[in-house]
Image (cartoon, rainbow, N blue to C red; front, side, top):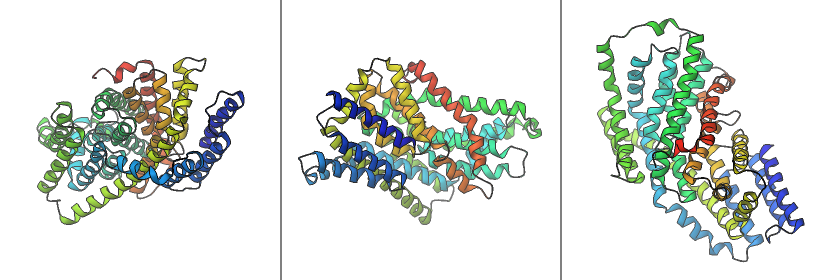
Length: 451
């Protein structure tokens, strides 16, 4: 198992340093035992929040002379009461309201009027609609679930390759984590004390590049596999009339992102504007019922509680490890290795790619950032640039078999067919994401030009 191998390698290095007298003054073998316990619990399917919290308490009990009841309450309160975290349930609620309002269906139809004649036809609409919806929802899961439910019926009975259809929807859905107001960016900002607004600005160019590269994948597929419906002409008057369906989306994007970039509101305040705007359009569509509000609130509360528990567990463990100087020592040790910094960064990227095949993206962030972030800072990399890189790697985790969450969401929307269709269809789009990561490694300024 890759995670287990990483733990053994990482802690084996600590054991070697301990024997050579260069390791920190902590007990090595109990740390190895606790780390293997973490890997074993994760492999057994234990909830990640429980693993993190229990491991933090046990580690503190074994190594720290401070009773856990003296710090666990303050750590949990500080984490859960952070002002930045308020944006998370608001964006989740906005996404749930949009899911039930019908705005997404109008968006999809309007975009298709303009993109249908490109090689690839409706497949371009999948990417474009997901990208625009992501700018409202901030969630990959919400984007995949919403646009998948709208798009999949459009392809029934057509000559489109179902694998490419599903792959494009998976790739487009994953964009929800990177395109502002992506919730992963908020979590990263909370874990590293980094500016959310700076992360949002830095994510713009990489998000645009991923979108363009996905369009390129579809364009090449369309050239090799032309479809007769791509030659159908739609009158300009019909296009202009249908474009009205994009107006609600543009207004919501202006409310959320325009107020942030214009300096009129913080991300948290912008999220509140977004909820109000989503409720307004749901009201116009006649979908703002008590049942819809109740279902939206329950779904948002359920996801917020899950995220909150994981964050509290991660912060408890991080508090203990930091007090034992484990992250600081790892960072100093790696930073002094006789290899260039880019080699270490490339190794970090490969580790994240490996973890993404068996670990859910959000859990991957909260369990690794407390240690990896200090390593990256010691190497001299920009924290905002690294936040964008981590988010891109999380997006790849969302569409990488066998544990890609977005792919399972899409599979749940299908009436029939094996999930291997999605596995095969998403591979070229994973290549598009990897291409952007390589570009950012060689040209980090791409993510920092608007700061």
